[in-house]
Length: 420
Image 1 (spheres, one colour):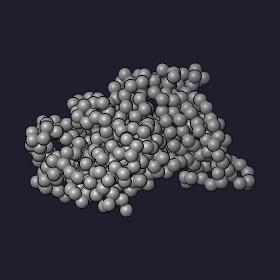
Image 2 (tube, one colour):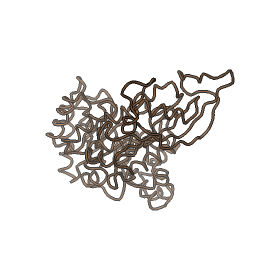
Image 3 (cartoon, helix red, strand yellow):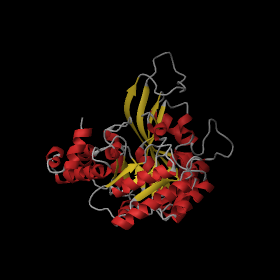
Image 4 (cartoon, one colour):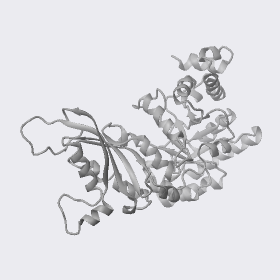
């Protein structure tokens, strides 16, 4: 791959010829504007212009996906909308190895062009200069496993529920119960960070006291991702609060603090960064608009996220199982020949979703989170955790869930409770 250009792949829809629309995209995001201007010399365009690398027509439809497109000055004949795959390349020296400025080029005003009635950023290929500037996850899959001391199976975790409303003392009881249950990982809900009714400092103190107390007793210190999302100055203070209390993970809402905010946190973080992608639906839910997860997860990896939410099989959200599977495989595909990020499966999960997850994703390098599937288990949280581990044991060994449940009571109870 060229080391002096960034390659961006798009899916576009346009009432124009695909080649014309691609040239408009390239010009708008580099040297061009709607008319020729003084100084826009051939030499300047040769050095700074984005280039159309390839165009592939996919299909033709009769109506536009998005409003506001400008029709060709044509005729009175009916308009067709062409969908296609377009690859553009951008000179690295237009923006340098800077993700905020890169995004202005590859995902900026393109979405507002009237020549398109649909546009989606599908993938990005970076030159090595970005890897040199952004070293990526500090922990990733291997470092997270080492810190949690969990090998040969997924990390089993849960989310603090109720999401909002627990006092620090009430949180203390929930954490104690989960720690004694032998769970590997707990995360705050994205709705709960540093609210006035239960300040982060008080929540961290309560949770870490229970985690350390149980660890002294059992020898297992679970990983807790405290939600430190906030403005930049407070983000740093929140991080310090967690670190000073002996915390071993922080969570940040990526789209709330921005990719530059995550990169800033990565510079000084000594613990894994758990990346929550809330607001992702607004970016991706329309198939002819926004961004594909393939591109998004590369950006998240570059800025240093160690764990990244990918939804889950048969979840309560809109995303298809096929999309979830592809997202997980994207995360565990090495980038720049090396680092990966740990995919996080959550939403509507219980022991019964382990076999299809393993069969379709072909990996145990995931963090599998279940709320009600653990806490709502009829045998209590400890049995809930065991049922999740047993389900993955069955999946990896190729034994059916029902057969394995015959000799594993916790799994059997989970099937009886949630299997319907």
